[in-house]
Amino acid sequence: MSANWFSEDIRSMQLQFQKQPKVKWLVLGSYLSCIAALLQATGGLLPVVGFFISPFATLPIFIGTMFFLQIGVISYFLSISLLFILFPSELIVFPFTTGILGLGIGVGFYFFKEKWNIISLGAILLALGIICLLYILQFPVLGPIVSHSFSFLTVGCIFLFSFFYSWLWVEMAPFFFKKFKPFLD
Image (cartoon, rainbow, N blue to C red):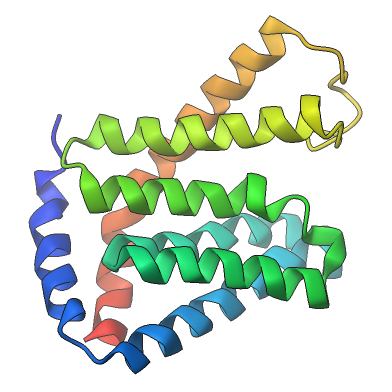
């Protein structure tokens, strides 16, 4: 199954955007970083509702990376810096989950045409980020129900969840592309 349903639109937008002045790239990257940091921070600022809003911190990183690789990378690291300064409690989660997923899917759209390659790249990066948080940094990213001791069942469930979650983002990409395209012209 290919991503040709969408990749030609992305390629033309990438070519068009690369002709823009570099100042526009920096402004867009900064803008997307601010949005990502605010969306990520809602999990801590709005206890119940924020947990449903904070996953959308993936979107600005994904959009920036999909259109121009350097913008996505700048947005990712600038978002981490903003979270470090403004919301340090969210700093550990963003780089390993929502941020890396946005970066992975955006890079997938930037380099691949096959939908399953795009989904797989995002899923692998997200799963590795969660596993790193859970088993290396000993951060309870999945809450108290998951033990810090290694389990193949847990790792398998993390990969299944990551694949499904990445697939959802890739399927929603055309919708977000159409919404953001006028802002990037």
